[in-house]
Image 1 (tube, one colour):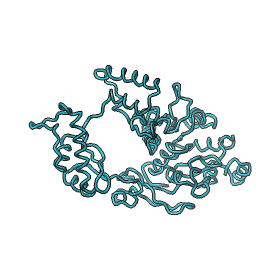
Image 2 (cartoon, one colour; image 1 turned 90 degrees about the vertical axis):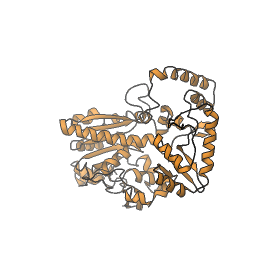
Image 3 (cartoon, helix red, strand yellow; image 1 turned 90 degrees about the horizontal axis):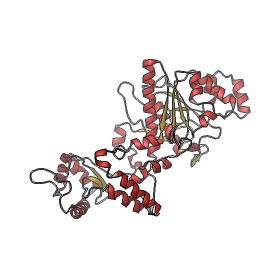
Length: 424
């Protein structure tokens, strides 16, 4: 049995692509026994840029620690196997298009009737209710709908582009695992299972709390005319760049931001994050920059007279200053002054980085077909029940026989199902 805080918890995972698999991998890292069900051909992510037949980088990165079963779940015989396994399971994860769970006989009413104690977590793009309930949706669609894409305002010409990686998907995977752990705790206290509904839309909106907060005292005179102006701009077929300009008329960015930005250095880039007044003072001490918004009496004036011009000038002065030293030189200086700062890396530069290694954020697993793999380790640790990468991602149908035997099927019956094309 695997180690970890969820050791002994049995999870049946019916999911594909990112959010559901990421959730299942977190549960597996925490010691849960996660059994992933795929169609005979394999889930789409397994087939995305295959490195060897039926194996891809993206699938291997999201499905470690799981057992793998491949079957045609539309067949009654396969559904009977699943229903038998549900009797002795704790958690079910569903991450399909709306209506698919019902078609496959793995919807909550069906499975909870078999096992009332089951914790059933279903993720959809937009939720089970409302005018968009029946729509499928990937991360890019939800980013567009919820303003994540507009908030970034990255453009390809005049067209907004999606934020990479798929932050709505990944954050929802974390949200799902969080909700499942809470439901298991509730079951421990009450003995009752329950249904959990997660959505990409809900997660994407939850990550934008300050933007999605309407203060009536301040926003009643701002948001309605903003919405009307955006509607007018769209009716006039304004470019997205122009629409961003309309938005900024009502939500202008503060001029002269020198404390929370990325600077080019003599040999790269460095990010500086100083949000408090105390840290801003430390930035000035580390750089020698003089910010005229700090008054002689110690007060800070956010936008003194003429700041629309002076603010951009201060930014230009700071940018020129940062180009005079290397990233390491600035990094050491900021560390001495207690200013949060760090270099801009590509993720591959964190392989074997001492900070990565020291915090267990890189693990090594051996995959039967892909060979040795370095990959990100569990993102958090626990003192009494440490997390670990239990095993590599399963090969397609690798554990079909093992799992079907647990469902009570004989070897002869398993071979009959295989001959009929129901299992791999």
